[in-house]
Length: 245
Image (cartoon, rainbow, N blue to C red):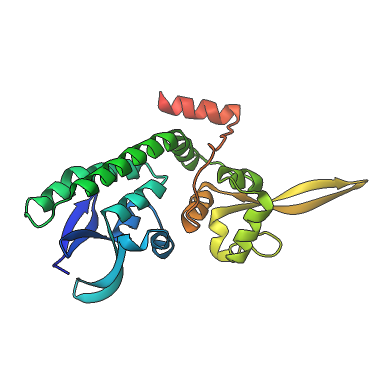
């Protein structure tokens, strides 16, 4: 394993290293750029031929870290819903790879070039398909919205009950489906009135704040399958329109 070569992408370090004349990227750095929180889970989904563990010496410390080759890199890019994915892919192919190849120590075969081209075509296709969903999601994230459990589950193609069970198993929600205190800032607990005959009961209901939707998406590496529907009252809509003028 050769010495680290460090690149800077939008003020974030992306470390690379050559292993037997093959380029590898530090998986944690790639995940940081792509907004993937769970590095271990992300790397588990990469083919064994495309990843290694090794001692990475940096800032005076030797650390055991996952590193991934180009194929593994594109695999992570394909899984990211973030708009940064496309910009990052372009940066890698237009800046990082040409820079490294200038040293003469790294080149790609015809077969590898063909596989890379196919991977990039597929990445562009998926990113274009995701673009409307990502744009709608980002709009939702910038607004003061709160969504119910069924709606959030539907964003990821999941059923409401299975989604809540997943959150309970992860100890994000309690048995009564209210959030633990550590995650309270991601949710908006409210009381909902339910009529049973002549009796009106107030029951707790857990709504998702925008940060909560983003958190579970990253925590469980979920993919958006539909756009979030935004609802603004007339006053809010008017206020936003005036602010844009």
